Amino acid sequence: MIDYSDLYRFFAHTPALRPWLAHLPAQIAEGFSPDRWGDLPAWESTLASLPRLEATEVELKDAVRCAGNLSEEQNRQLETILRELHPWRKGPWQIFDVFIDTEWRSDWKWDRVLPHLDPLDERLVLDVGCGNGYHCWRTFGAGARQVIGIDPSPKFVAQFYALKRYLGAHAPVDLLPLGIEDVTPELRAFDTTFSMGVLYHRRSPMDHLRELRGTLRRGGQLVLETLVIEGDLGECLIPEGRYAQMRNVWALPSCATLESWLRKCGFSNTRTVDLCKTTTSEQRRTDWMTFDSLQEFLSKDDPDLTLEGHPAPLRAVITAYAD
Ligand SMILES: Nc1ncnc2c1ncn2[C@@H]1O[C@H](C[S@+](CC[C@H]([NH3+])C(=O)[O-])CC(=O)[O-])[C@@H](O)[C@H]1O
Image (tube, rainbow, N blue to C red):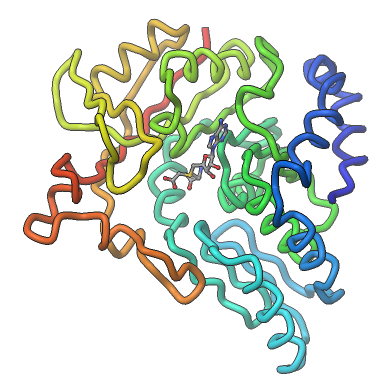
């Protein structure tokens, strides 16, 4: 579906990435397998039908947007095609005159994370579970040398490449249809690794932390963002049923617990740098994501609780360094 030849060349020229390259083409073929994803041909034809348009201006630092001289008809055609890739969860994106108003204000998360990042200049960055790659672009806009996002949902990969052709077809920002388990263990290649919104989806959080450490070179920075609970060292919520209607939520530790897990898994200098309750302004139903959203997942009587009676979503950003 996507031409990864530039990325394969980059892997070949980067000694630390070479062990992964041996498996990568087969993993990507598997990630885009039509046997696994019945809608894949439809997404491919959407990508193929996108108009060839030239951006005269691209902004990636303060927002993600591009501009150019398009007719109303061209903007309308672009919007119709991009809407075929519904639901748009992460953003927002301004693509010419088309404003993709996504479910999440991912720019608000970026604003919380950015002040705590080691300078990104010249860094090789991995974004684990990057969705459609919104933060990958912001990372590149903040100076990174090369950004590789991974996400096992090929629809999000399709959204990313739909926009990449306008935001920078040859920019060193790519997204692979893979999960963290596909990254070669103990690669120790990346200067910065993001894992944002992923830990609570992993059945074994400790294994996830160890996998993340394995992606980083010694001294590389981990930026971990996840759902947490208020509480002391040792406390952790493991919801038996759903959490905020999500079936695949496993562990919500307190910050102190999570920091101790990080230290146990080979990180030091752990720091909780941000704690933020998710609001219905940050995560909400929009014209580009018309399914239920946070508002519908909270208790009608008490917005501090989820529908199931658990504490409502509280998210922490924790930074740590790989030993
Ligand atoms: N095994 C896996 N490996 C990697 N990714 C996975 C895996 N399983 C699921 N995912 C992916 O992890 C992402 C989690 S969303 C965070 C997006 C972004 N980071 C954000 O911070 O806005 C969560 C949220 O918005 O709550 C999804 O895109 C999954 O496909």
